[in-house]
Image (cartoon, rainbow, N blue to C red):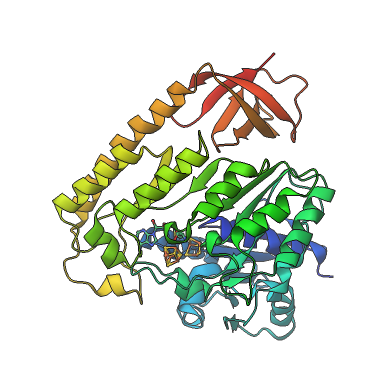
Length: 441
Ligand code: SAH
Ligand code: SF4
Ligand code: F3S
C-alpha cells in the first residue's frame, strides 16, 4: 500500500481515456486517492497522444509546468504514458530531467510496480517493450469498482494497417484481438454491476478476430453481446471502411442493443489521395457501403474523420472532398490538417501543402459540415428519441444523455429522472452541437 495522492492528465483518443481509467483503478487499489491538481499529487501521470503535432506539443508544455511542482516536492514520481512515451522511449528521460518513468502503451499494468521501484531506488525507468498478447489487465472488470452507466471495453489493441500518415501502428503495435470469451465476461461483469452501455474499443474494430486462428467475426461478437440480459446499448469505434461488410450492416439492423451509429472515417473524397494514404478503398466503394448501410439500417447516423492538405492534395482533389461531404451528408465529422509524423511514409512525401492552404481548406470543410449537422439537428425537432441519461448537472439540475444515434440531448426539466434511466424524449430544439428535449408523455 502506498497511500497518498495521484493525478492523471489525459490527451488523445478513447484508448487513452480508457488506459487512464485503468491506471487510476490500479493506483486506487494501492490506497491512493485522486488529487485536485498535479502540484498536490505524489504521483503524476501525463497520458499522451502523438497522432498530430498539436497534441504532442501540449505534452511538452504540460511537462514544463510540472517542473516547478517536482522542484518543490522532489519525492513526487512523474510518469509519461501513452503514445508519445512509446514513440520517444528512453529519449524522453534524456530530454526531460524531472521525469522518472516512461510507460509504453503495453506497460500500463506495470505502473504500480514501477512507481514502487522509483521510490525505493531513485532509478529512472523506461518500460516500452511490446508484448505478444493483449494485456491481461483488460480483464479487470469493471474498472474502479463502482458501476459506470457507460463503459469502454477494449476488444483489440494496436493496428497493422499502416495508413501512410499515421503513427498509431508504431505507438500501439500490431493489431491483436482479445479472446471473445474475455470480452463477454468483462461485459457481463459490467452489466452485473448496473452498467447499461458499452463502447467496444479498437483502432479497427470491424477487423476483430481476423488475427485469431478460426477467430470469431465482429458481427459474431455483437450477436453474443446482444444476448446479455440488461445490456441496453452496444457501441463500437473505430470501424475501417475496408472491413465494413454486409454482415455488420445486418448485425446493426437485427440486434436490439447495437446502436444505429457508425464512425467510418473516409479521410478524403479523392481517389488518388486515398491511394497515397494507403486506405485500400476508393470513394465509389465507400459510397456503396454507405448506401447499403442506410438501406439496411434506416436512420443510422454516420460520422467520419477527414484530413485536408495531405501531401500532393490539389485544389481539384480537395473539391472532391467537399463534394463527398455534400453527397454523403455525414451527421458529424472530425476534420484535421495533415500533420507530418515521425517515421511515417507521408512525412517524407514531396509536395507538402503549405500551412495557409491547409488552414483555408479546413475552414471550408467546417463551414459545409456545420450547415449539414445543423440541418440534421433542425430536422430532429418534433421527433421522439430514446435517451440514456448519463448525468444530472449539479448546477442546473438538467439531465444530459445521448440518443441511440449518439447525439447529445439536454433535458430542460428533469424531475424524477436519474442517471441510467432510458427516457423517451421529444426533441424541442435542434442546436448547433446538441439537441434540447423534454420528457415525452
Ligand atoms: N483507427 C482510426 C483512427 C485513428 S487516428 C481509423 O483508422 O479510422 C484518428 C484520426 O486522426 C484519423 O482518422 C485521421 O483522420 C486523423 N489522423 C491520423 N494521423 C493524422 C495525421 N498525421 N495528420 C492529420 N490527421 C491525422
Ligand atoms: Fe491509423 Fe490507419 Fe490504423 Fe486508423 S487504420 S489507426 S488511421 S494506421
Ligand atoms: Fe493519439 Fe495514440 Fe490515440 S496517438 S489518437 S492516443 S492511439
